[in-house]
Amino acid sequence: MVTDQAKAEIEEYMGQVPSWLDHLSEPAADHSWGVVRDLELGETALPNREKALVAVGAAAAMNCPYCIHFHEEEARLEGVDEEGLGEAVNVAANVRYFSTVLHGSEVDMADFEAETGEIVDYIEQQQAAAAGDD
Image 1 (cartoon, rainbow, N blue to C red):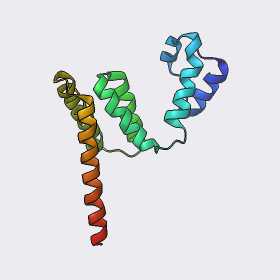
Image 2 (tube, rainbow, N blue to C red):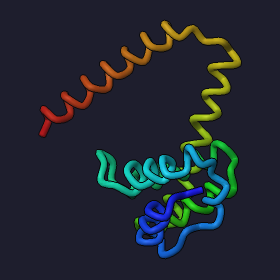
Image 3 (cartoon, rainbow, N blue to C red):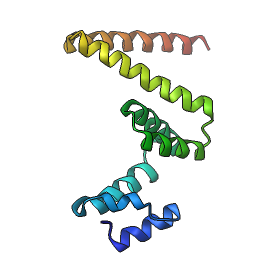
Image 4 (cartoon, helix red, strand yellow):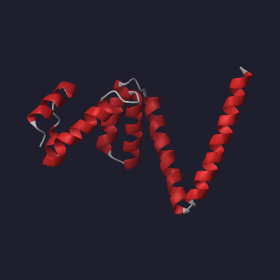
């Protein structure tokens, strides 16, 4: 159960204390809120809009209807339209698809990392050349 201090913070952020928070075990309750507060709602290296889109993609990949609903609403609050939400879900699906192919095919990780490095080098060279054209 969340402490009274954490409940006050949650209510300040959200206007209420969601009932599902009562399902958090005592040792983790306040800590769990702290992670949400500091990582998802706080000022971090990623803008809140990007964090919301990451959350939508992760929720979709996990097939969690609760998380999908919450994070889609969060993303809408950050100005993401339906097209953007759909794209976030499609990107997550694409990552999951290729992850399944890579794992199922048992692609060698060292080879994969080496090829990825070569791809990054090539793209960086193309970007540098394009910037030199300006």
